[in-house]
Image 1 (tube, rainbow, N blue to C red):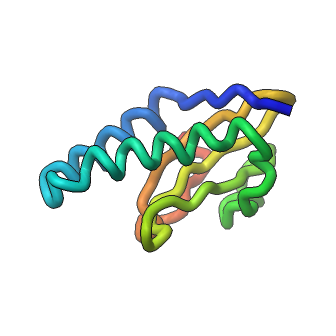
Image 2 (cartoon, one colour):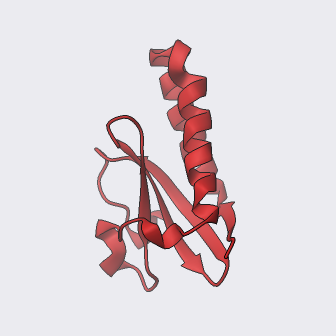
Length: 104
């Protein structure tokens, strides 16, 4: 089955903010990082259930999974799967506190 992948506005903004941080601190690798993360998110089109359950899962009424990204796996995309759609609702650095329902 092929899934549709949808990023909400918050996740898109968080991804853009992370890119801008990289562009400021490592301009040479920022575009590669950003495009790679987008490709990783797009890979959720096939078998999104391969990703592990997120630590925050018990706080939400739906199953929450995470896609880890980066050389050190220090960024993650949090998402839920509904029928044939993967909804990415948060993109964050792993050093940040866990997401709560109030954050979404």
